[in-house]
Length: 347
Figure (tube, one colour):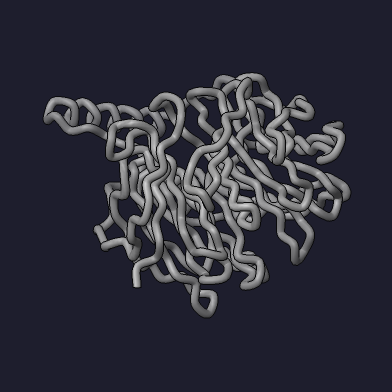
């Protein structure tokens, strides 16, 4: 639909163009979001760099089965999922033919891995033991993040450009339904306490709460201070959600009891993937800019403990809550080739 601009909107547009031209003349690059936050040393120590197969194209999400020590990494640029044995510290398998793979989620209870093939608008189920693709199911446009609902045995995919959630039977791959969000989809998470699904609606700057039994949106939670909520992860025991806003480099703490934002912190530009260690109550926020932010959750209050550039392309993080190690796949390691950076919390 074409929207007619008001005189005030035209003046604002003209002013923006003047600023952009002036910045270009001055040699300034305008970037989305705010400038990088003040640097604070990360409380992390590099313990290992594991070589990864393939080229130096983009990586995306990663998911860990801590009991088996298997980390699954979406190598988007190569349309592959790389399997890393974190006990042996080596890549052990490459699962191919996953066009434009974005999201990856291992479900240890099912011994399965789920991956979204965005270029094909599909979600694939993979046998965790053999690496064999078991089925492929259709999704909406540009499927991205994933979540698993253990009560209804379903896998949820966020269809970013499609503005919807596709709900798939975890065992058979049959599509059980679609939830239209009314805006572009960000990430999705399952709340085991209320047994509801939470999903970012990033073009509306809100969080949608969905009843997985009826597939109806039961609540829309506004996120004041957030521009384009993309990242999402929960701390269920503390009834908190952490939301990363990639439009203005902010991290919001949302109380899942009152549905109010209780804290806002600045993170690196274009925050993307979040990981949470429930045992240590540590939060990790990896940004497209290569900056990583670490924070502690104490008494339901988040305190930033570190914020700095980790590595170019370090926008993906996974954490092992048993060893407390965090993992960052990057296109260029110390030798210039793809690598998995392994960090341990510093004393």
